[in-house]
Image (tube, rainbow, N blue to C red):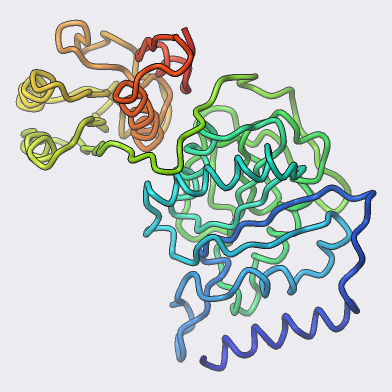
Length: 365
């Protein structure tokens, strides 16, 4: 362990000593489960480096012990779910995490769950859980842009505020939330808009839905998307392979053929403009659809709606339109839809795939 890591752990222990012994369980406080998955918030700076660091190195207990003020917000249990950089997040880990959160909320009756996560793919994991976990009680994702051993890490304050959000009655029935730098976002339309800023996330359409500070958790409006169904995936669920293809000037569609050849069950086109594609790309889409591959047209543009049959005839091609979902979120929804089609209806309902994309989430019929 290098000097920086030792310093971080020493600081954690020092903070714990200042706070005194761990407080007794309080019936007046909510119960919150903190699940740690790694990321920058658990990162350790590389030796002789001012900016480089290794993500997912500090244990969950040390992260929480470094913020003793959390004990005044909730009775927290801490689990190390995994400890990775978020670029290494996988579909298998998504399924396991979804089951763990569902168990925590429905079987162990936690009042809320906080998940520490790397910022690079947080928007994807959060959206997956939005569609696959019970959401009456809050599930809050949080991370940091500076590693734990930085001169001025942002992780401790972010974690404190995440527990505060998860503990607040106002957060109920708001689905899966993401917080950084005091802003609160819904998971459906969030995206990482800045590589370096301590406030790295933006909303594609609605902006932050709330704000947290030392005084209170405040929401600006009622929940935007309201109640909606979700999947409860079995622990052994294997999600189908769905690839994202990025369109550009001169794109010939070869990567679509390659994706199909390598087993993709679905393809999301991050098209130009309104999900538009070159003639060569359209021909590649036709070949994919003829082989039973589900294809969704989305856009590489940050905001705006990819409407059905605008510029490209979805009726003729047999494609789906993503509407306001990002390519990354469209991929996740398509994975879940294909999984459902493969495994059959569980409650005697059928799926209108396009309606699911128009709403941006799973819709029962």
